[in-house]
Length: 444
Length: 137
Image 1: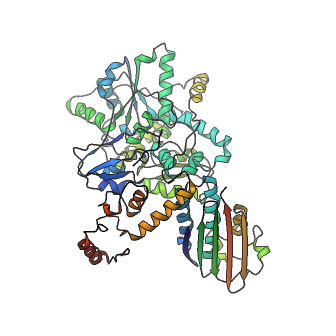
Image 2: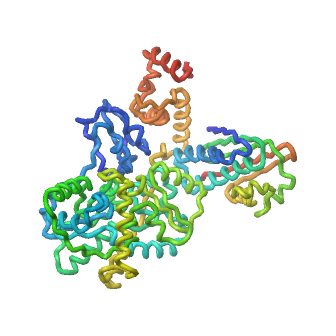
Image 3: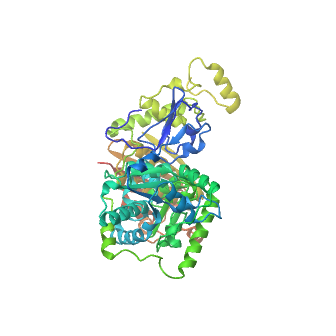
């Protein structure tokens, strides 16, 4: 398939063609129909893929992988910062304490541990300001989940204006720590910020942000990789606990769980998780059926980030741990807002200025041609082709559905003979089709 | 290009399928997002009108490069006073229908504010024909 010019997007999801058996599981799982089987191997189309990771989940031979940065890169920096999401702590058993996980990360070579959710407080303030100033952009859709943002860009281009044009807690956290260290006189070249990711979408967002400004994050490490390293250490030795030096509250810890974002905003808010649910809800927003003056939180994984494709722990167990940690933090805080003194107003204002996104561009994958007359002819041709295809979406042609094949044929990327039931020498298969699905050959 | 759909009176849960299908096609055609929005809103309202008031109906949508024409025809009680039905807040919907969140009397006025050309003909105890045109340029 031809990629439109100038629209290359970084994708963390890759297919190892030495392992792929072309079994079509990923084909059927992909919510944007971004996969085709060509010559027995799965091929990902960069302009359609939103890095949700559904293909990664279903691959029976582990041919789909998520490319992380080389952990050895850490050695290049004098100051090595681990940006840890709350969901990382939730991967470990109930009796493993946060301080032990911190200690293991330090032993692995990090000099600073900073939890991503430190950015939440600043972000809530910014979001409230944004919503007040942009009443004409209602309903407000959160831009937290990068796969949701990409999904809207490619499948719901009319809704890009509804996305809150602000960066994520991850960016607030990395910008804050970078500013703080450079303020202390440390050179930027000596600082390496590494994010520990639960999913492919976050990697893609770091490597190719919605705006073409480079991220302040230097590397991304997969959660399962570091989980294994820490687990091995915990199993072997008695890790002395590292004093915890953070200023998180329960609210912050819960941000990445389902509803954890929406609960912070007044008005009629919604929390939607799971990519099929997200797509269904976006359809309704597009039809003007949803009335919301609060925020619409959307995450493509079931149970939000706890359901991230790279997480080793069960998502429900992880959410439970996250909730208990939030409760225990709030109990310790006992009404105080946080453990550490907050940064000066001046500092916060500087960070805030770096948080806006100017433009999120729509890039529809549905549009058939720039010329409406030509597109109209193509839709007619697709409908005609669809009418003669069997409609059982078997995937044997290498396209996920008969509709997708009809579109591929019209675009000149496939042929009608690719359908095994349509190929001339396949009278026998038509018999089969008739016997099993009561299908009557419609074209002859 | 023409798309045709049947509508079943009283089937609230199934309403919206015609406008969804039209939306999908308009996206494939690359029609401007704000245009798609008004077309989908008007079609959805028209669909709901048939579901809420009539026994059955059909929608025919003709798409060409410069305009979209939709004709919604139903068999039903008809509208006795069209000028009243066009007023915001006026509704003959039953209390049952209102309880479901429909029948606020905004249907026809909302349709009218989203279309370029609008025509409505109705015969009491027979049915209603609604025609609307959207210009794309």
